[in-house]
Image (cartoon, rainbow, N blue to C red; front, top):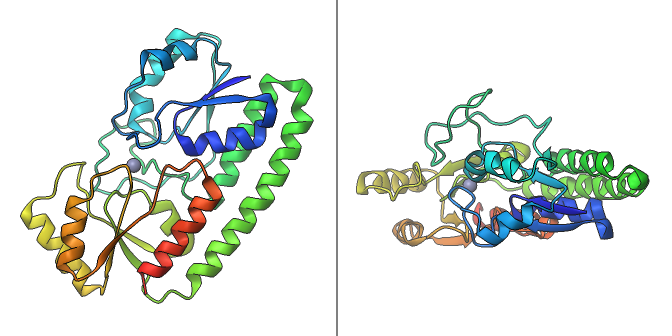
Length: 266
Ligand SMILES: [Zn+2]
């Protein structure tokens, strides 16, 4: 079964649930920005033979801009909404995302960076694969049961790792870690404003905030330029650390992120 996922982390769930029965391709490539990516002609062609499209469904700009075209190209294409059943966080005012208001208004789209939400994603993907390929639904169910156990364990491990961290606030350039923060009782302070470079006044505000909160680490995504993050880190006498919101290696990446947050929030 040909499956297309809009972003790398979603492909992880398709591979784990579908196993050898699926061949998954990803629209936004590693290093690409899902808030502005445009598909290549080759990707558009590949959509014609896909049985299932797995979308984030949480307001990622790439999907809002392109889903109607994808469905127009392939009328038999089924869509799995990976965020179905997830409690989305209403969008804060200071954010780069400027998606048009949907039926439930604007939300923080980065819901996959939460092990609890990952269990919902896994169940949504399983339901979609089983509906298309009913003869093998037992396999998908078994794969889901195994993955769900791993994700529950991952949640517990990250909770344990972050429990003893005294400083609960962190500064991150791109605001991708709101769900992670909500899950583990942390507070995300985002630097980036509407995807634009910060003005000197905004820079000064962030630096003041970081100093008063005793913050020494500025977290950055590999997908976004970190020149301003470097400047802020330099000014507060701290460093930057990279946390990836779009890794396909889902569990190891979240473990590494938890380790980075724990180390950077002492
Ligand atoms: Zn983002």
